[in-house]
Length: 106
Image 1 (cartoon, one colour):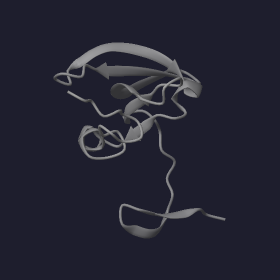
Image 2 (cartoon, helix red, strand yellow):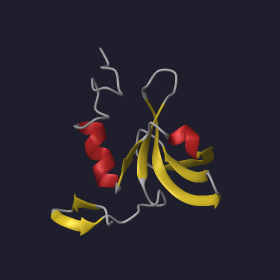
Image 3 (tube, one colour):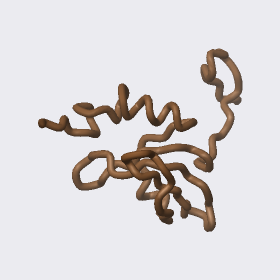
Image 4 (cartoon, rainbow, N blue to C red):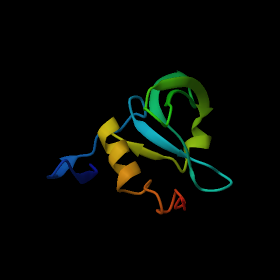
């Protein structure tokens, strides 16, 4: 039995497995359920481990790289591209005052 889904506006197309490689993300902290990092998954050096390129917050420039286990990524928010990640940060799930970012009071 084939699994089908509506993907990219095409109902009934076969569902294609998605790799984490190339996916942009906001990491969510285990303790406080808040956005911690932003970046992109750039490698899978060992099964269950992923190499991340993190971006700094002010200008979005590449910063440091980290290696994390898949188990630590369970509650993260993933996006197909940088524009979707930025939209989520400005207007979506990762927005200020949303479920993963507290409202900053000046």
